[in-house]
Image (cartoon, helix red, strand yellow):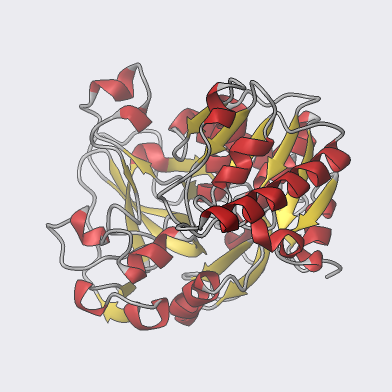
Amino acid sequence: MTAWVIRQDREGEPRDAFQLEQIEVPQPQAFEVVVRVMAAGVNFNNVWAALGTPVSVFRYHPEEDHHIGGSDASGIVWKVGDGVTRWKIGDEVVIHCNQASYEDVEVHGLDPLAAPSQKIWGYETSWGSFAQFCKVQAQQLLAKPEHLTWEEAAAYGLTYFTAYRMLIDQCKLQAGHKVLVWGAAGGLGVFATQLCALTGADCVGVVSSDEKGELVKQLGAKDFINRSAFAGMMREGGETPDEEQARFAESRRFGKRVKEILGDAPDIVFEHVGKATFPTSVFVVKPFGKVVICGATSGFHLDFDVRYLWMRQKQIIGSHFANAWECTKANDLIRESKIRPVLWKTMPFEGVAEAHQLMYENKHSGKIAVLVGASETGLGKTADGPGAISAEVGS
């Protein structure tokens, strides 16, 4: 099969790290399924895989000398391994990216995310979706929403299911909550914004341009904040005392703007930026409020004034993807059109490296999908219903 492959000796910028190769089609073991990939979704995790930072993905699967990335896919069941009874050849599916060993006891009573074997498929494992065929555990399969095209169905899994667990399960999001969403026009933020609107919570989205701000308002945000108006609040690390005082003043000014929009300080801050924003997140969330974080795209060494945490009894909650139950419940909302994918661009299979380069350079809004087995856009839809929302406002 044809696959986009990263090898350790060419880690670097995505345009160089990803190269097309011919690889043997994987074969399913017990409780595994091979899927003919029709479309794949692009996520920041395989930007990291290309760069080899913060750690090389080959640390996670040293038994393999290649990495086939891709943690989102829509496709057709091609082969099933021994013991698979729920899925059959020909089923149309989407894939969630959490893997764990069936033998780990945490899977059978605590949470698969707590299992020592837990890995993110297509990042901490190989055999991801940037290939004509991919191999997954049977429990990773979800029914494809019939009203979505292949590319639309590949454009939501990792980021949406992550946002669902963060807000619905970890923070118990409910009507009346006030929420600050960083990166609200990105792959995570577009779903956090929709979940707030669906539950009756008010949110304000932080974005990098007014155009992206109009998108998040379309998705249900009360308003947006262009981060360029508060550039001085971004933590770079190593600030002098005077620089830190000036940065903190900007955070105070930002917090006032958030209160103006929401009517009060946020109950929840939706975090995934990390070093640049985390001190501000801890400062602006209200007493007894929650900062929930699932990533750190600007850096994972966080430095903040902990007095604003303990003296005001705030909480920091770490969250990592979602389990199969949460993915199923979240996918039901997509199937019911209560949440919709937000698709910025669909690219041909030849564009996988370019797509990751665009994401690396923050030149995207919402999700990028890549056609794999689908010959053109618009295929795969078998029922009526609204498709993806375009991340290009007005298009």
